[in-house]
Image (tube, rainbow, N blue to C red; front, side, top):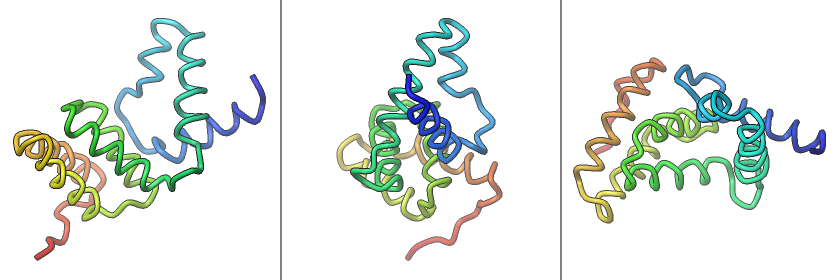
Length: 132
C-alpha cells in the first residue's frame, strides 16, 4: 500500500465523515475483519470517493439519490452528513430527494426526508428556509 493512497483515504474520510457520530461502515467491518476493512476503506474512500472526475458535491448528491431510492436509511444518514460536509446546501439535498419520487415513489421520499430532517436537527440547521 502506498503512503499516498493511505493519506488520500484519511483526507477523504475526514472531509466526508468528520462530524458523523454514528457507527461508520469501516468500524463495523473492522470489528469482523481488520485486514478486509482496511482494503475496503482504501478502495471505497481512497480510490472511489477521492476520484476527481466529478466534484465531491455531485458525488454525494448522486449517493444521496441512490440511497434514497434503495431505502438504505442508515447509509443515507451518513451520506447526508457527507453531502453537507462537502458544501451541498440543504435545499439541494431536499431537491435531490424530491426528484427521487419520480423513480422510487413518494414513500421513499418521505423516509429520506425524515432522515434528512433528523440530520439537520442534529447539526443545528433545522428548520431550513423553505423554497416557494
